[in-house]
Length: 136
Image (cartoon, rainbow, N blue to C red; front, side, top):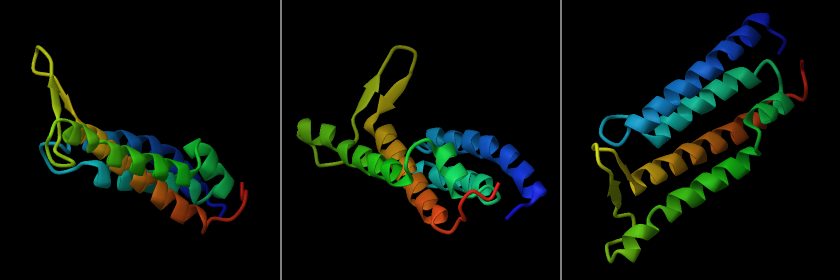
């Protein structure tokens, strides 16, 4: 598909969707959002970018194979439950680290990032199979 409007829209939509998806990923601990929705929005941005350009340009924009992104995300989500086991709690009981000033990071963030990557990689792998080779 060689559509000038879609090519220009892809250049604009991709960075905006990535920023918005990271915002949703970060706020997903306490409010609606999180890894799944953020991953879908990021994948939609990559899909809009890749539609007029073809499979090879989509894969070049991702910089890693989509299956590898999905696998790394799945592994990260699964490993995020291990700290709960090590502390004597059930699997996926999230652990938190608090610093002075109220900043806290927990294994819930690692789980959400894993889900984000798994969704991004899965959707991009699915979309890439339907794109032609090197259209522009």
